[in-house]
Length: 347
Ligand code: DAH
Image 1 (cartoon, helix red, strand yellow):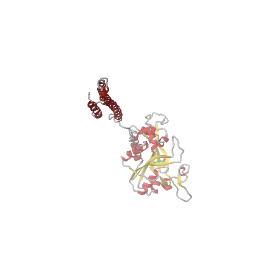
Image 2 (tube, rainbow, N blue to C red):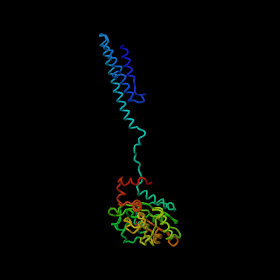
Image 3 (tube, rainbow, N blue to C red):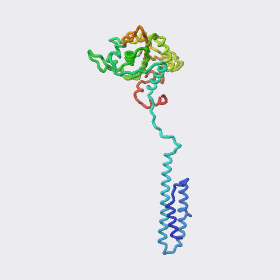
Image 4 (spheres, rainbow, N blue to C red):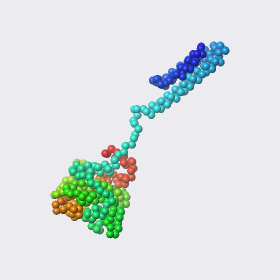
């Protein structure tokens, strides 16, 4: 046995690396058996050591111990790096699904609002928008509201300015105010829809909220008739709630339309048979509508002898409630993800 050999083994151990090994754990085990196994190089050297002449024993013994320590240290190093690589390969396993990243989605009210806009756009209506803080003229007076109408009361309307002798200013209570602004600034033919936020002084409950959304539609031209209104309503109802949907009109009253009506659709949940959503009637109330009152046309500078028009207005929250069977208005505004996520798939 040569001292040189031992130094060569030490060098070999130090130079050995795991890098090129296909199966690292197996490689480490082979390496261990080769040097530290029962019949491995080191035990053979220790066997031979017994025959070493006494004067060489000290030097040889020290060299052998260095070899053994080097082999043990190398194995520890290999084991640690195999473990680390295993952990790394677990976190970068390309066959695993990717990290889930949150993708935002539209609020159900936006989805429904966009759908209404879309349906009316297809028959030539364009979107009109206006202010949310509105004066008395555009909110009430031009729309033929009598002076003692409850909407002019603090109990129903959030007033921003309400001073004796001054024009009142309020958060708009309906999007019908947009009608007035459009008619004042445009000549017929006018065909607009006005989507937007409205505000009413209501206690918040499952069925009422102080903020909600409406879509108003207005069509003014020569010879616009109630038949045009009916056909538009039927088209809208079928597009929104399905081809099988039927409509019915009930006489009603709004200051700004004459005649006025409320439209019901056949209940899309029970198909008209009667259920707890339609309260057994088979019909669901959907919107208000009518022929624009000549007083309103005149107030907005449109000659009511030459032109006529129809208007309709609906609540977006109610549309969404009926379409997706949402039972409580408050859910729309609470931002509870358990509610919002149910509509993720809608675009
Ligand atoms: N502005 C009404 C409301 O807020 C809704 C409405 C009813 C609008 C009839 C209309 C209409 O244009 O013709 O309750």
